[in-house]
Structures are given as C-alpha cells and as structure tokens.
Amino acid sequence: MAKEGKLTDQPLLVIDGIQILYDESHRASLTVRKDEIYSIESIEKGNEKAVEDYGDKAKGGVVLIITKGGKELSEKPASEQKILFLEGNRKLSRKKVEKINPDDIESLNVIKGREDVKKYTKKAYDGVIFITMKEGRSAR
Image: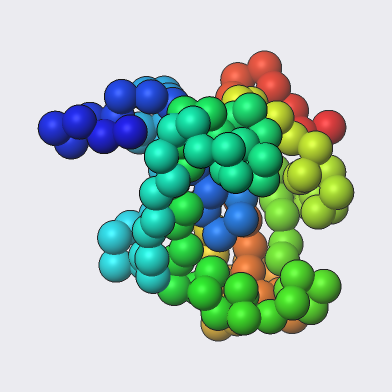
C-alpha cells in the first residue's frame, strides 16, 4: 500500500470502526493527530479475510487505526457505547450512519472522553463524531 511514503492504492481506512475509502481528496480532511493514535495495523491488498470482513472496498488493503479514546470505547461492548453522531447540527442515528456511503464523506472529526464531550452536549455520551459530507451529498 505504501511506496516511498506514498499510498499506491486506495486503502480502506477504519478509524475506531468508522470506514473511509481513502483517496487524495481526503488527505487534508482526516483529523486524527499522531498523539491521539493508540495503534495502527495494515492489511495487505488482496487479503481474502479483509474482503470478507469489509467487502470489495478492502481490495486495495485496509489500514486499521485505533485512537486512545477509541481503545477506551472498544473495551466496552458496542451495545453500551453512547456515541452522538452529528452532521452539522443534525443528530443522526447509528443506523443512519451505517447506511452512509463512505465515498460521500468529506471528513470525520472524533471527540472522545466525557469531559471533552460535555462541550457539545449535556447528555452522558462517550464520544461525538462530526460527519461532514461532500458537497451535494447528505446523510439522509
């Protein structure tokens, strides 16, 4: 996937469980800082298990990134995680988010930790994910 520091294919990025099909247009919009990263794992292109798990989007390889906040969340069962998903000021359900075509996403901004989340909501959420859609696209 990488050659001399450049991506040679379109890997599927999975950041704390959120899938993003990476291309050059995403370069400036990914907002995960290196000091927020807990772990990174890569799966080579053509890996049958990756394609089985993630579908055809994974044919170019997969980069799995877990942030420090995501590690805390991953220790909880998904059914116990309370994540607030926002597109602009509009709240989205987890089901609605799962139906979004990753190609329609311009950027994701992830806020984790209850203290940081309190800046955005008074309710007891474990994290907030801000979703910015590409121009002309919507999560509806």
